[in-house]
Image (spheres, rainbow, N blue to C red):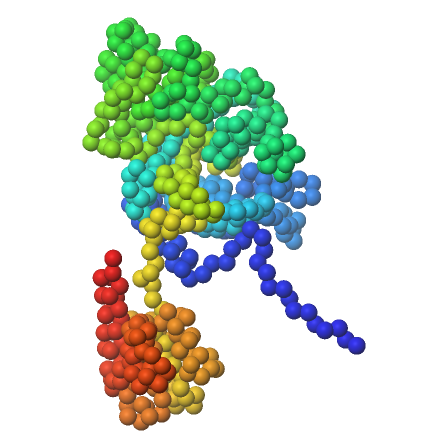
Length: 575
């Protein structure tokens, strides 16, 4: 006896999501606003394939049998390894390198698309997600990095997020690299440990200083106690190495996380800032010009972030990398101040900001923040992160700060590795799905204006009648009205149910009697539902025919238009 055939199980793979009309329209609406800002800044659209040669992606290279974990890969018939892109930056770098001589430089472009991560899925963590990037290739100075920060601030406001509810945080990978060098993690031989450190620090918002300290040390148990949950192996640093890193990360705006009795952490220009020592020409000549005003007669005006970082300068002043990072941040801040994105402050003799010099501006749109790291290995300079400060419910109903919705930074080595010559580059990536979730929770993205199509019901199925229905649909479409003819095989009641589920504003009905008279019935689904709620009994409902009118065929389009306009006016009048 033959075995019964089994049905294929319909199931969605772990870490992936299906998307419906509302999600797609919401994303397109949001991305249209982002695109407008990118275009306003002079960026041009570009796109690259979802699949690249694995070695071109750079971060993950094939081992003996298959590429390392992190990307979805397969082998082509020529035995070349191919991978689904894990971000939009690496394919863009390959494109620029391959077309370098043809492109106008600086090359300013934006792109959006799906990226894929072969990682363990979890709540809010997916294997496929969309990014929306902007990149500048060919600008060596930090002006391009400052522009990225300004543009991201403008994107947030274009999406309806007011000042004070977002901030673009900026740091410099060179500052952290200088600290890593000082604690003995410099050189190529420590590249793997540095990456582990970077990924640990990048989890500061998630795990806090205590959790990061565990990841910098032996490791961390997910359950919070030894033996509970999964164990993540740490970077293996000792306490003497961990302490400077935590001091860098936990410098708050008031500086209270620094021991006030420790002279090593006093503002390096304390005596000058307090007025105890006059900044004369001789002393000014010993200071880096970046820390001085344009006429070199006083210290430049810094924001909180620079004041906080400068408190560490005496400790790591012997690291050229650290000091170069500070200088670049100072230059970025000057550009941001000139653009009105950052306030200026005077500082007291211990590096505390005491006077806001731009009182007309209530909030910093961009902020220097030593805790920003970014986990990807290819960043080489300034790094930035867009954070939403608004508090909204999480998956468990708890009120939490939403956090990061995008980030980026300078990656001078990514294009260079294809060409063997320096090619500076910087960019920013927005997490589309995460930002979309935030905007919906904040009520900044309303798709309620989307209405379904007008549905022409099919009462008779002979060829002549179907032709009549199709003509009605064509007339509506030619007038710019969304419309469809019901193409199922059900009767009138299921057709009405279908129209209701589609969100149809109205339906068109024509049976044999109406066709003989050259008439159509048009039922307003919105008004009909409202009126039907006040009618008791099926017979009374049939007699009243709420929201339904009969008009000549020649008035079909004008009547439908009048119903749509009335519904739109009603929606707009509601608070």
